[in-house]
Each structure stands twice: as structure tokens, then as C-alpha cells.
Length: 412
Image 1: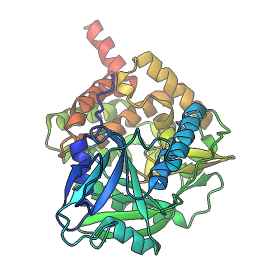
Image 2: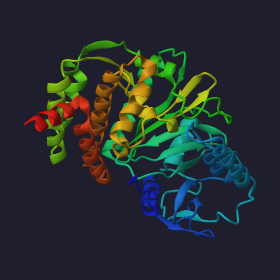
Image 3: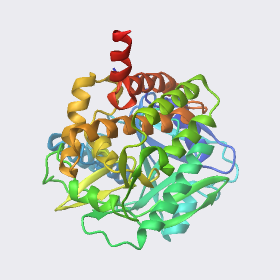
Image 4: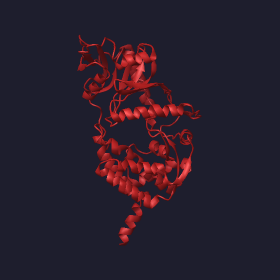
């Protein structure tokens, strides 16, 4: 069972306070607050916030209408209906909770000088409101702000890095999008950078929106093969022995530079993987790094894909397909079922079953190397059990020599 926790009301309030330069206090204001300099509507309640928005109901409605390819047709219909009810005020008596910013000092009503709302208004050259969805607790947590006009028209999206790790990822996404901006993809659409800079010591990235058609044309489990092939080919595809690749060396570096018992265990498993499979040839290309149905929509035969902070080149070919197709937490799946699913996902990319086993091991390695340093950050403690589970899975995979070692133990 997933151990993911949802962001708390207290954390959301801290985030909102951080969006102002002057000291502010965020309090509940169910029926309004006479001294409030800015108020935020909260759905479904201030104690269980899932959507927070400034401005009129149209801003809240715009946040509710957001969906991705992972949202089924019933979910889309429900969101559209709820958004319409919010916009017209039909649910005003149900969702009445507000969060109010008080003791704002230099801040004026409606956002005011020194707020990220004012910064976004300057970037877009018009009055804006913001809305954000509240999700799971993450080590790389960062507010993602849906920037809209007071009438609810989407202007773009903004990411605000509030921690060293989040700032690093926001900078990486800005660089990645600029790198990809000059390339003409046939099957893939990505956001464009509107603004990237520093605000009050935090990284701020503003990008264009990728709209989701209401009626999906493809099944949710349909793999976007051509788009993945096209992205993998960006920068060229190379083939070389696994142990000689810069990617494998980079994973070793992550383990060596992390002071933790799990890092030492990862080093041992990487050495075992190198001994068993290091001489095997592996294709390398580019990958998105977070290509799940929740980060994309189909638009005709093209894929609209966002969240490019994990994009990288020189990565084993096919890892995006595994990320998309396998369970979000593969360590919780039975090994035979996981291997079968991996082989099925990689088959459209001309990957043989024995090669699929190796790529599955490399995929688990990539996840472990990603979460290991994150698990040692302020907000990453919940990742530590997952890192251990991923290491257990990596140890059990055939490509790390598990089958050979078990056979040798039985023979002895």
C-alpha cells in the first residue's frame, strides 16, 4: 500500500505566507476577516485543503477544470460540472471556507506590492489570480500556480521553488525547456518558457499552458510510442557497454557522494550489476524522466507533455516506457508480474525479453538513485522506506545476478 501523505493545512499556510515578501499570518476566515489583505478560497475546507485560489470564483473554477490523461471521462465530466457550479455560485454555501492573510504591513488588498501575485501580474502585464492544487508530501515539493485572469482564462503556470532541491529542479526545467525549444517535434508538444528568474530568493519559472481536450481519443493505458521514440532520439542514440557508460558512472557517483547506509548497499548492488551485466551493450538516448499519464494529454495524434525537470540525455533507451507502464511503486508488485509488464511495455521498441530484464534493473536503479539523496532532505523522510524496498527489488532482479547467485548457493 502506498505510504504517500497529503500536504497538511499547516504546510499550505506556510507556503502561502512565503508568497509574500512582508511578514504575514495565514488564518482561517470562514465568514471573512475584517483585517484581511488577501483571502483564498479553499476546497473542500480549510482543514483539508485540496484546491486553494485567490480572486473570484472563476479562478477556483479554472483550477477544478484541470485534468490530464490519467483522468477518465467520468472524472472529467465531474470536474467540468463542479467548475460550472463554482463559477455560477451554486455551491457557494457548501464551500465557504477561506484563508486570510493578516498583519500584512506593506501589502495592499488584492495581492499588492511584494507578493508573487504582483510579480506574476507584472510578468503578464495584467491583473491575475492564482490557484493551486494540493497533492502528496514530496521531497521536491513546490507550489505550482495556475495563473488566470479574474474571468478565469488561463495565462500560464508558475513553479516556485521553496527549498534547495526544489530550486535546483526549477532551474533544471527552465534549462531543459530552453534546450528543447529550438527542436521541431512531430509527435510531441511541450510548454514554452515565459519567464525564469529569482523572486525573494526563490526560483520562479513561468511557462505556457498545454490545454487538455475534454474528450480523449486514446485509452489511458495506450503507450505513446512514437512520441517516446522521437524524444529518445533527441541528441542522438548511442550504443555501448553498460559499465563503460557515463550514465552508469553517474549512478555510482550519486551513491558514493551520499552518506547513508542505503547508499553503501546501492554501491554493492551496482558493483554486482556491473560484474553480471556490465559488458552487455545498451542503447542510450534522451528521456523525460517523469512521463506518466498524469503529466500528459493526447491532442489528436500528438502528445502534450509537461513537467520537464527530470529530462536528461544519455539515459538507457526505454526507461520512459517503463515509467509510463509500470505501477507507480514497482517495488510493491510481484516480481514475475513486474517482469512480464516490463517486457510488454518494451516490446514496441524492439526490445527482446532478456534485454527487458536488464532495462528493468536499470529502471529500478534510476529510481533508487533519484530517491536516495531526496530521502535525506527536510521533506524526504517518507521516502526512506521506499528506497529500502527498491534496493530489495534491485537485489532480486535477474540482471543483477540474483538467479546465478541463488543457483550457486544451492549447489554449494
